[in-house]
Image 1: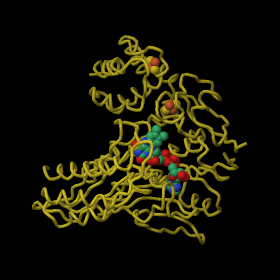
Image 2: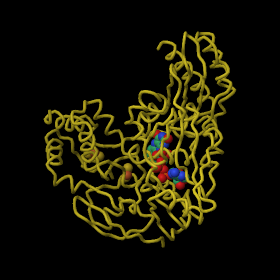
Image 3: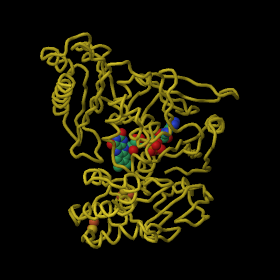
Image 4: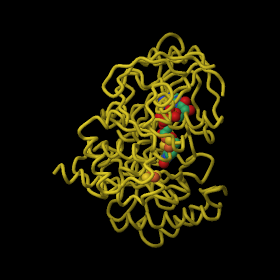
Length: 288
Length: 157
Ligand SMILES: Cc1cc2nc3c(=O)[nH]c(=O)nc-3n(C[C@H](O)[C@H](O)[C@H](O)COP(=O)(O)OP(=O)(O)OC[C@H]3O[C@@H](n4cnc5c(N)ncnc54)[C@H](O)[C@@H]3O)c2cc1C
Ligand code: FES
Ligand code: FES
């Protein structure tokens, strides 16, 4: 473990961005990843530890003009308790419902889940389905600037994201889905609580008149990062949701999922799980 | 040696000032710096809930929280809850239902049960079970713990 020379708890985004510009900062939100990683020696602290939980305006959900902004320090419990998330973003709500335990949901933040960039990060799969964008704040020349990156392009590999060291993830933005949009999240682990996903699937589409449109499918834990599944999406887009379409979509899943074998499951098992669970999810949508 | 941080916060209703290392967990602070040993170290990884404390009215695993993050907050440990009427009701119910064997998990369960009932005073049995998912008990098999919490929920009705 490297030593921390300075601990800071800024109260404004300006102040936080100033500290980041000076460099050598480890950002701390809920600490549910940072603490175990630092204790296990997997993470080396930078000389400055910056706690962002007191930064004003970073926590909470606001909807303006059809765009939902979720502040980076919004906790998983905040999302889980939100009526808006529950009623309109079912896949995200279901992911929160399957997330760890109450104590961890109370501490863990959405910004931390995104920046930790685990291939099995539970909010990441529904956020990909919702075409989420990451809002990054920085202060390069004395003035606060914002950069927006589609979440889909944000992940580089396990624990690696396209964030400059001088940037703070300030929020996630989602265009509220259109009327008739249905979505769902499925996570498979070996026990209900406190389990890392063996695989997870997110699905979203407008389902009207028996047909699917604006289809979005994402997989967790079957590749180095959470991914969208373009082959599955193509197999479903514009199609009536019948037996034949479902079989075609499940066949296509093999082209999108590139799982590995590890202590939790073999690659073969993961592929079979994706196939079978996708079939089950699509049948659930079909049967309402 | 990592930086030391001076923090001020409320501990079980009383204002406290202390000095902690920037890397220290809230659990280590509570036990080793403040000397309150009711909060237990089970796994140190967020898996068992033995270290559950309440911060600004919300429970979390103190083994995952940075001690410095307690600055300015309202922290309650089992010692604080034990002195509270609601804590007493839970304690009595745990005893009455035989929900304590070795007792190592008990402070964490009582803290979390208190939080579950504060948020949802007439929590159903299923809701109680969901609420305590983050707490492990090696002895009781959970049935009596759930009954003890449900007993307090029923008494409040
Ligand atoms: C027992 C246990 C069970 C868990 N179960 C699950 C689970 O079921 N599903 C799941 O997805 N995760 C799970 N996790 C992982 C973890 O709880 C989540 O990833 C959580 O969302 C992390 O949020 P945090 O605020 O605690 O992050 P922190 O630990 O504070 O930070 C995580 C990382 O993100 C960086 N960071 C945080 N916020 C920002 C920001 N705004 N800008 C830039 N960088 C930032 C930090 O520097 C750090 O690298 C579990 C963890 C534990 C210990
Ligand atoms: S000691 Fe904190 S959860 Fe086990
Ligand atoms: S009573 Fe022994 S661990 Fe629960």
